[in-house]
Length: 440
Image 1 (cartoon, rainbow, N blue to C red):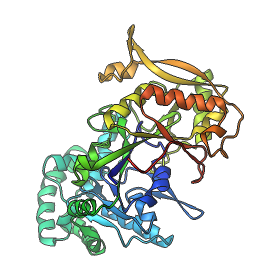
Image 2 (tube, helix red, strand yellow; image 1 turned 90 degrees about the vertical axis):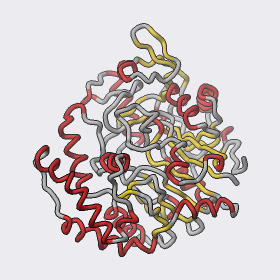
Image 3 (spheres, rainbow, N blue to C red; image 1 turned 180 degrees about the vertical axis):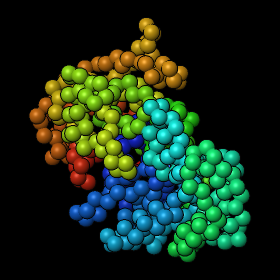
Image 4 (cartoon, rainbow, N blue to C red; image 1 turned 135 degrees about the horizontal axis):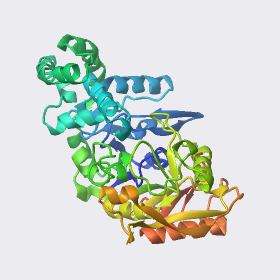
């Protein structure tokens, strides 16, 4: 069957890990195509929850080959540590394939990432400070060091020497930070080469041969549509193409091979870090009062909204259907997986944002002007809730309360894509399949 892309439709943390966990067993390859260890996916192994930051979720399945594509930036130390964690939990990493062309996150990338955020102060973007942005900067400037370079000590040293000639003066003169020697970094990084060498592969060739052989490929996005470097809320975005269009670029598999694009949409909206968030229900510490503060606190507490990678409290708000419709268009969604519907069981009525208002003008679409989106006021429709009804045991659409059914139908009609999977509790089997099929 044609390949599938799995992508977040909001600002991340929509529950991609659970949906991947549900469908990955039907695929022969599960491929990360962008981002780095700034992502966080929670997967379940037996009775244990595991947090994956760089490893494709397909590692959890014996039938699936996990692949780190060329569009990913790799912190080798973080990857080796994650592999050790998985192996200690009884999860084999033997089938892992790493693209020779993926770029390496270096120690100075992490230093520069943290220093840049500190200088920005209250205007900081809210990065994880793990070197993702500076690594992509070097990639775009054609000054990056790739995984394949790590496998050739002579080339690695030459490229590292050239990089440090540029980075050390910046670290020292501009930020007053520690500088590096070639030997210092080689002592840390060359041992990683011996560990990772068996997993190196020409992944573009591997995946295209798999496609020709009729194998099933799942492309797994890391962040989400509104964090896309081109289509997100710039500059409060990540540094890669995390919408569905990034899958062909980040793997070398042609776009015509993709037949299904599944968008993961939380039943409300969350965001980590800075940037515009029109439907945000601010916490008291951020200036929220009354109903706004109560709603934000309730969504955070009931939804356990804390970042997998950072542990930071997520900003929370009502579902933004303007962004949902935008995500359908940008990604070409064929299906939507709606997650955390059970969290809304707390509310008598539920708001959904259907448009924005700014300086007397109504916006029925996502405005690209940064100043408009920053100051946009949400225009809400209020829908009846199903407060107090436990939906965690529902396994068919018809078993849901009528108001929950109406909520789902309202959302899919507004955004223009069918909701074919509905998560009603954290457990793996707490999922409703609705007109769902692996056929295209």
